[in-house]
Length: 480
Image (spheres, helix red, strand yellow):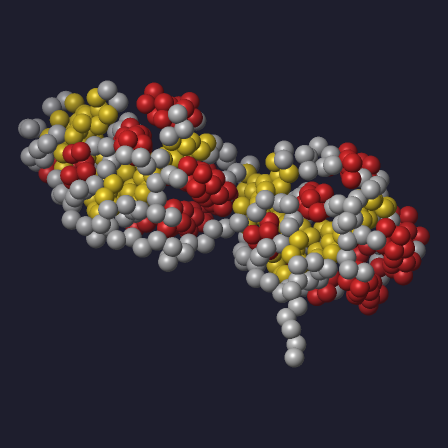
């Protein structure tokens, strides 16, 4: 009778990385960290190594570069994860550059064996393994010798109970023929997406034996604290069942009436209108009403800086910690990072309301690199937030063309459960604002078009509907 072997998973110490790997790196596995130059391979390896290394879990780092380890350490010690006290005690560096120039694969293997035997590490890193592949000994394309080297290295490291990481610069076409891709238990692929002046780093777990990983490309950043991974959030349709029974007030009683008693909880509402129509003001009232009834909120600013966005009222809510503010002014954004920050703040604050101001800025922020994925990104953002039971209000600025009725750019109106529209009309030589409810999914709502004004930082909607509904279809109205 056979029993199941439990493989221990090693925590990487890289925020978000363990989530991609299904819990961590399998102990005694043989892994490859591959990617283009400058993508962060060495930094990722060092962050994992310093997190895992201890007197009982030693790490041996082989450098196969022409430059000495001292130069590499000079830059790595700028990160807070670097611990100088671990050098030469829990972590040891060995330079194989001379062996690579003078010896063959067998000689390099023997040197690695001796160092491992003398130091007894639990972790072994080889950077850059690509240098071994391109060594003079393999200049003739001796694939058999390279494959033998890789197999022997993997076999020895496993027999010595060491978790091994080979670090190398590889391009996708080389992956199809390189022996290391067959032998490796885990393959972590790092890439850089560059479009015009914007660049976003991505990581993919191509392969990891014995456990389930998160598929697809995931965003990561190299910040002053090191690497942080933002795993793609997958919408769980079973997470929240939306019934539409509970209603949420927008803080404008007349608009609540037009919506049929308020906005159904966990709905996503799209508020569209031209510049100056009061979209951000209505969003502020929505958040303030939430605070009043004990529902904290979060606002994500994609278009304005915090100083431009915060009215006196909203600034008070943020200062008191009743509304969380996420500044998303960076142009190199991805939906993974945005969702990570939003979900973290929602969970921390127990927030029930979220404002995205605005989708126009969201389009600009994502479109710099991910224009072709904008609709998919927006769909996932809305689905995940409403799946958490959060009520979402999204603003979107549209050019008022009078005779051209549009509810969103990029045909995104179908993503919203409710749509409220603000427009301008010309009346007796003046611009007037009108508001209407376009749709509320699975709910009756008013069909009225009503005038409204902005007084003392709040929307005031008139009780009676506009007498001439054709006001939206013409350029001017002669009577009222």
